[in-house]
Length: 375
Image (tube, rainbow, N blue to C red; front, side, top):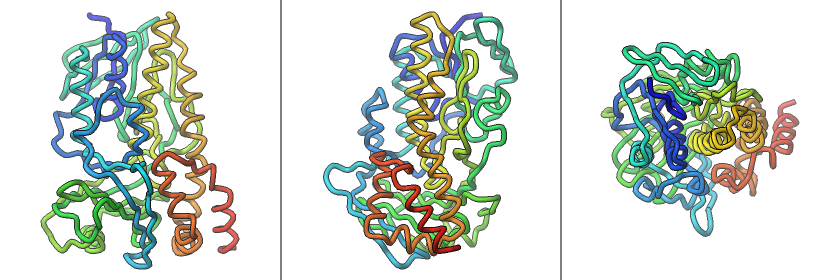
């Protein structure tokens, strides 16, 4: 049985980017992916431009839109616009292209990808992990769990929260740009209970999304989807809605154990207020690879630095993002009036999306304002 330096379970954005980083450093990497190749990935594609610094590839081929302004509405009315000056800090990428660029990069550096494989069991044996699949077993010094929001293995290994918290989402891709202006993204509040809808434009099409973040409110409703696409300027019945649960951030937890760690959606890192998933996926992949590299190059096995870095770089802000979400989505009309419609608020939200600002920079003022108005 060949011994790999690292085995990664999951070949999506988090898994493929972790593989690209590690193989770029010369390590032997195996990626086990349960699905076959996907032609369309249901993701809005919003990404802070600064994330380019955390990728080992040129992503120009994946970029569809450089966002210049952010539009906000409440039930498709009461528009507020935030202009983003200078070089665009926020990009829209086509996820299937970005993922394939990372896979190609990792493969060119020696990473082995095996698709349509089901992992049956994981077992830690002294200084390595043994992964048993349907018809084969594999062995590695380190293990990375990157199998997304429906991850079984992160829970099995007690990585992240014991009881993951989920946002319910729906994704629709339509040809054309509807009523969006060029180089703009739009968020509509009030139309979705405990959440919001959004529209992110690609070059010739648009990604429309619906998300609800509190409780277990269901959005699997064709009439709701129809109303939302009407909001964004479309009148058609020819579309497919893809429903998905997203693990959202739900507290400070270790993201590592002995010789294993978890990244991306499987680590419950998705933004609990704006559903941003690409940035935490790329951040966690980068720092996971760095931590594993440190261990392998120093003949060590302690990955605790990874959990500490992610708490500092991501979770500290998300703790405040969760508090804002819990207040804002319970009182959305007040939240829109006192939050989004404030003179500086749209720019602040745009800065959070671009990574220039964290929730902790604004949270206490926002929460006090909302609670005071509803007490």
